[in-house]
Length: 206
Image 1 (cartoon, rainbow, N blue to C red):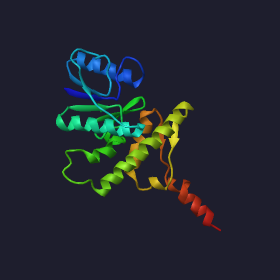
Image 2: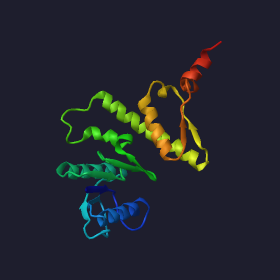
Image 3: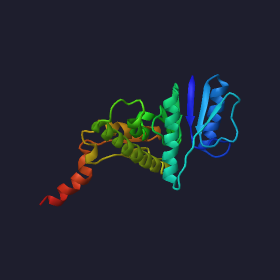
Image 4: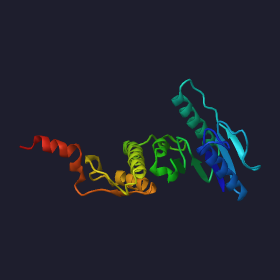
C-alpha cells in the first residue's frame, strides 16, 4: 500500500513524533510505500521511506498550523495515496490520531476541513457544514469528559442536554470517542431536561 503519514515533526524522541517515526519504520519494513509529510525529519526511520518536506510559515502559531495543513493539501492534491494517516489537524485524511487512540477521519475534526477538499466539484452544502461542526463539538466534548472519567476511574459518563434531543449523529460521535477511551457513554431518556431546557422549565414553573 501507498501510505502517507502526516506530522509536523518526526524523530526518535518525543511522544507522537516518535510514534510516527516507529510506525513509518514498521510499515516500510513490511513492504509498504511510506511517505512522511512533515516540516522536519532529521533521520529517516527506514531506507525506503520518502520524506516530503512541507513548509509552514507565519508569525503566529495558528498561521503555522494552517500553513502546514495547506502544504499537506497541495501534496495530496498532486498525488494519490491508499491511506492518509494524520497526527495533526489537516484538511483531509483517512485516519486522524487524537490523543492516544486512532479514530476514523469521518468522526473527527478533520471531517470539518474535508469540505474544502480540492476534488470537491461544488461548494459545500449547509447541512454538510453543520454536520462537520457538530462532529467537531462532539469529539471535543467526549475527549474532555471521557478523559476526566478515565483519570478519576469512573466507568460511565452520562451525557444530557437539549442538543442531544433527536440528534443521533452527535450521539454517535460522542459514543464512539467515549468508548475509545474505555468509558461507557450513557444517554438517559428525556435527558434534554437535565440541561438548559430543564432549567428554563423549572424557572418558569409555579
